[in-house]
Length: 172
Image (cartoon, rainbow, N blue to C red; front, side, top):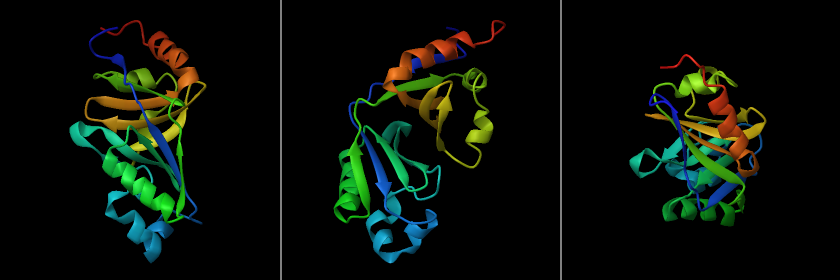
């Protein structure tokens, strides 16, 4: 693989998915005083918002209406999720093993993704999104050196093969 684009495995030990019981838009979560107290400012309430941990790692991603994704959450983020679960605002599910983490890094990461998605359109006004890459359900978050990517574990090998295969032959 050339120096302008590489795919790296990003091991993840624990993954939590949280779904709120909110009705309507995510704006209603922030507007409701009882949920606003529980969610507070620590939750990314804007669709496509990300709570960033140390070293620029995405830790809590607002991936869809009333849905959050927490890959390798810190103890602080786990406390936030547990509090929301205990307040019966939604349900937290440990889905460790379901997702495989990858990093797409380098100047040509956008070009590699162009084989299956218009990443500029997918992340327009967002830092993350739930989408499909080739045949795999995926979650992607932009970062300064490329993208953090999580695909269903059963699709990880095929996703890497496809991203590598679709790399244009004329890349330097």
